[in-house]
Image (cartoon, rainbow, N blue to C red):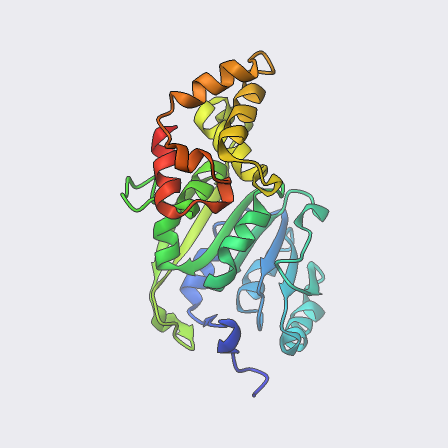
Amino acid sequence: MNNQTPDTNIRQHFLINNQILELIASQIPHGGQIIEIGAGMGQLTNKLVSHPDNKVIALEIDTRFETYLSQIQQTHSNLEIIIGNALKFNYNNFDHPWLIGNIPYHITEPLLHKFIKAKVQGIVLLVGDSFAQEATAIETNSSEIGKLSILVHTFYRPEIVAKVDKKYFNPPPRTQSAILKLTPRLATDYQDKKLFLLRHLFLTAHFGTLLKNSLMAGLIRFENNKLTKNEARKIVSKYNVSDRILNKQFEQLNNEEYSSLFQSL
């Protein structure tokens, strides 16, 4: 394989349109830390480091592209290169960075699960168009609401900045793409009980607790421990969530059940 050839086995499709690269880079204000995920040969990296106030960390799993990134680094001291896996990277080691990148579809949702626990300024991702539509389904009043839609809505204010034609990639992917911008919700947003409960469910899902017990715990926490378990149980019973769903773990729900839970809350 040629060193400059994208590896489609790991879903590498490089954006080659200069205007779209400029548009993506322009979503991030100058003067902060930026972690670029999947820097590749540095097409977007070049745009990001061109502003000397930016501190750019280029994260790339493919060692073939280290040489190209190093060439950029020779003329831009504000670039740091890290060869590593974005799914194993600790984003909290950095001071409220912006996250940006052209993300393969199969790792986008796992990455979002990592991102919700990281303290970031914002996220700008080039993703498949279907992923962007699903991520903004609640905001656009779509009927196709699933786990991803609820995850994004719970932690971010999402926006599709632009659609990107597949012809602007090398090699062209099978589907169209979109620039998705995610702005983290403010702490005050979680004064809303529904958002608070959803955040609690996502952040505690790994505990293996039944949904009904997770909801009770979330309600008690929302009310600053002023509710008793019995009072919380009565509130949960009024949500009109089926016993079948309540007796599952949150992570075990399917998209139809996630949608039903979202509407019930």
